[in-house]
Length: 254
Ligand SMILES: [Zn+2]
Ligand SMILES: [Zn+2]
Image (cartoon, rainbow, N blue to C red; front, side, top):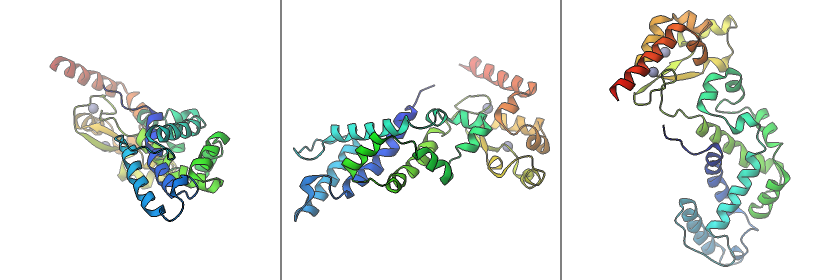
């Protein structure tokens, strides 16, 4: 299995574009942008920053940030914000989301404003200072405006499925969407108080073979009541046996 970018690298990626936009629109930041030549300069800088973000910049001037400066700035701001996150948010993965219902409840793909505000209230002064100095944003509201969508993007990027089946872990088969609480049971599950609304929207990605086995062995009502997570499914010996067997099949083909 190939390992992708780390969560921190993902966060840097998510932060780069919005920071670039702010940098371009900040009035006080690059001194050479003031005055009558502002528009031309701004356009030049805009092209330059596009190249910076694409990683192919060569353009340099004495007064403006060059590629390295800009990367250092982004990385620094990202580092100080990222390390202020709760540890489980720093290490969030697709698997963690699948296997821990509490976790999925806290860090669903669109965070509630209150959770977001709580996370942003921990951003250290040093990161705020950098944002103020280079991007001319200083009010907490402006910082939240920058960070809210970035944090949502980060969670989405970090919890994306890596292409392998949630049950058998094989990664060369087309995946199908499995509602952990079957859709037909949603109304009843909610009425009877088995799950809250957030839980009802949770899905898993299964290869076709595993998906068929799950529905053949377990009735919708049992899925809804007792087996609404990958962990719970794997607690059943028949499902465990199955995933072991298909794992062996793959090894033999290789
Ligand atoms: Zn599978
Ligand atoms: Zn299904």
